[in-house]
Length: 388
Ligand SMILES: Cc1ncc(COP(=O)(O)O)c(C=O)c1O
Image 1 (cartoon, rainbow, N blue to C red):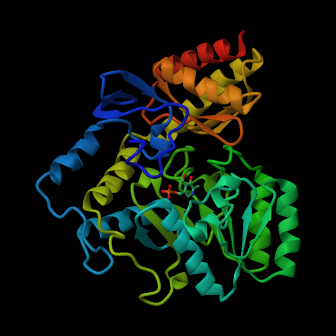
Image 2: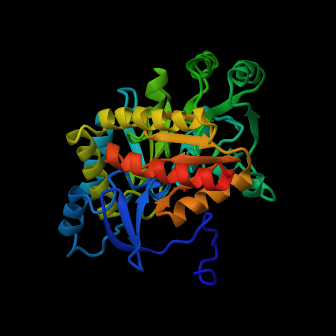
């Protein structure tokens, strides 16, 4: 794998997954079972081999090609997913463009805003992560490693804080911006949750200067935080939003009037992967049927309570979360990396984020017992690494 995969850089451990797994547990190729607190970086909301997902796989088992040129040759799965998405987005967002990945969704959100406004400057936030394609990369600030050495688009970067939001007013009054792009809860950059005041200010000033607001919901969206979209916690509505990961395909969603003329945005396979599209519909319907938004809110509180207890015991710092998008900090990056490694050794999959944080992002179907099992492993790892 190291030789064959040009992009090879696993987290603090290397795991080779088999196809076996059930619920929140997955097996590696050697038959070792892991409890999953990483959810394939938020892209596996229903866990492993959920009956609704198996149903889709069965339905398409004798279908070829699975991928069609979805922007030129239409298929019913494409329409069905757009219809489902429109049921869970604000009324003003009535149209969507489906694409292959998260970064491509961001890329196209930017293009839509450049064309719509005829402007060239984009505004983003410190610690943001929007993907690694060149446009998205221009607004990805979480690690220098990602963007240093590449030609980037014109941008202004402001602090992800209430002060930053205040400064945004000055930036927008002095510059003609094409968009402001924000993650309503920052993901890769450290699971940073903004205050209500910050998000309200961002929305107020973008409206005042008629600058489209793009909410990047690729990690925080599709129900993870207990609302379909994290921006709903802040009672705001953006002009443009992106989704991917838990949706299985990339999506840019906006009012139809914002989309450019035919041909400006497209991609051979965009909206053309039958299984992914059908899986996305099944995931949305299952989240509704199993009332997982409510469950995520409740389980988020339960797990946050457990993390806060560990914080009281001084085993971790800054426990935080919105629904099942949770994280905590260690004193150093080294300690964080060691805890992630220890978790793995003890049978728990976790991922880092930010400088010294660990994400707690289990599948939406997690039970209290499984939550307690995972937190117990984290406690043991923390005790070992911090020698307490
Ligand atoms: C908020 C956000 N935007 C964009 C992306 C890029 O998505 P992808 O990795 O599918 O290109 C990610 C991926 O982690 C993300 O978290």
